[in-house]
Amino acid sequence: MGVVHQQSQRWIREGRYSVEVETGREVATAVYPYSNGVIDGKWLESGVPLEPDWALQDPQDYLRGFQTAISDVLEDSGIDPGDVIGIVHSHSPYATAFAAVNMPIPVYLTAQADEFGGPIPCGGFTLIGGEKIGKVVVKAIGDSPAVLLKNHGVFTVGPTAEDAVKAAVMVEDAARTTWLALQIGHPDVIADEDVARLHRRYQHVYGQR
Image (cartoon, rainbow, N blue to C red; front, side):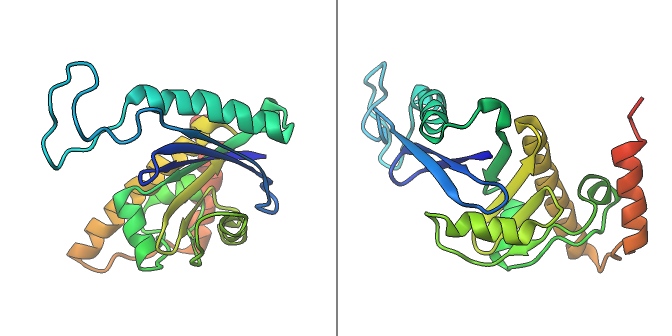
């Protein structure tokens, strides 16, 4: 099972979804409305007025959302916390730019070959909400720990939350360097057999002792 984090800037709430990794089926949901919502009038503690174009959030709302919504969704779904894997969803700018143009990230870099073992795929467009987005992720991600969603953003997975976060950071790093390289010229894609060799060494030999 995976627990997906979604933060809505429009409605200011924390949402957690429990989904079946194999199918993308939504098992349970939990939402925690932010008690302070959008802070656009004055600072909470000092009462000092905010500038007209300022809008803030209370960090404690964010932390309470994590604590409350995750517990609620696990309880509603009946899932053993030990069975939960890590799933990260982000809108990091360079990777999301590739998603905006529906472009997978090719393997121009050995670091990407090491970590992902191939291109970072881009799945099709789907509206947010319900089971459709999970099914698109499952269909497009293949054996990769990361996938882009057209016109949306990035999803990464891992056996732990730390692994999923690491993959999300690496996706953005690969996307940024790839974009910069494309401004200079036309980088060469690393051959599939070399990608496989690099990935195998990184996963099973490099740093294993």
